[in-house]
Image (cartoon, rainbow, N blue to C red):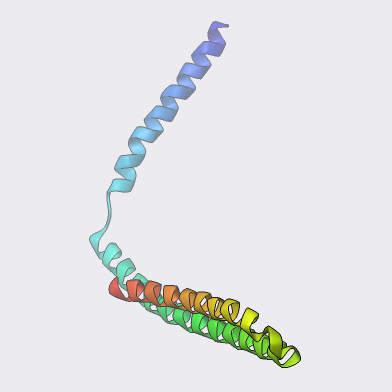
Length: 114
């Protein structure tokens, strides 16, 4: 029983020693390497911002086009139901546009970090 307890105490001591040394090991940085990494990340942020807003605009345009096509198809099949379908159609377009605007805001935030 004493051997078992000694083994656990030793494992705990080694674990605490490793955790205590990890802060020192990861705390030292090379300033030149940090600057190079930051410059590389700025380029990736610009690419991410451009691709993000491009894909969001493309997806939003496709969604709005499909919504409009289905709305006009429904109205052409049943003109009497156009009043009931108009408000949900406008709300759907507003929600699609909101998603594109959110992507635009995120792209602006990414560009602000560059």
